[in-house]
Image 1 (cartoon, rainbow, N blue to C red):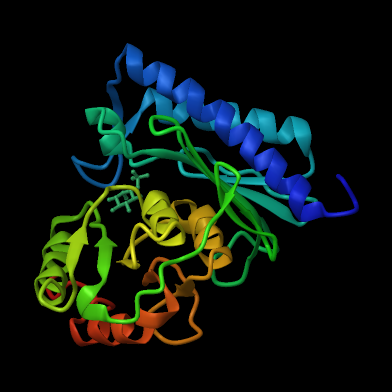
Image 2: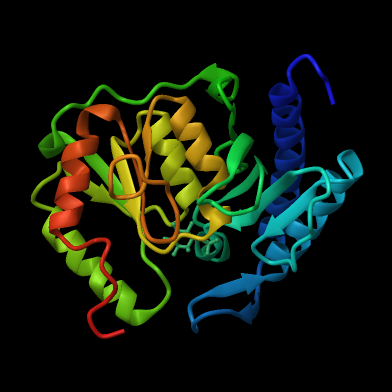
Length: 278
Ligand code: LIP
């Protein structure tokens, strides 16, 4: 590893591998995609492309850094002996990928410490949407870019004029509660978007295309890279409480001017609460 700036070297590896994997997945998409298995519910799908893309990413990463670990959405995980673990979502926005909706991405991050969002330190990350030819990247304290151009969050300071995004889980009981939260939020913001890929939602905040984003129930690979990119672009990223960390309980990312108001509105709406009947 380039000892002068390890973060930049890790960022380079993340960009190189995620970009190659995204191009491969886009090729498979063009030739047609089928569901290969179901996971947590009849709508929580995995395709052969998810599995093949993750295998390709793991192979490339371990060839470059054989002592690192892998935590991937579709794989069994590989323990780290270097203290670094690569956190991989081979195709984030799987349903969009299945339906050929151009809002899916390959997300690759590398973290230091235990592969646990509650404690890890993200060192570098990359999110690639090959359909829109957009490569988002960041390294810790190294800034965030989109296709090499520096990213900065919006300067929105009023929740009522903020464009925010969210997402929904795959379990019906959780989706109903999440819809109730949207019902509470929809009159307090400019509008709400549901893109279907957390990594692109987080990158949207980083790029100023969204003023905020929240979602409950994300997996580590959904947010690992996008959270770093958003944070390096100036977003406040964490859970619902100030100074809390993003994770499955709640992930909130927003431009600083609306963060407190967004968190307060989400708390009032019960966004952090489990579904009442499930
Ligand atoms: C997706 C997330 C998205 C969420 C979807 C789904 P996947 O991840 O990125 O934010 O709302 O329900 O979980 O399953 O496409 O990798």
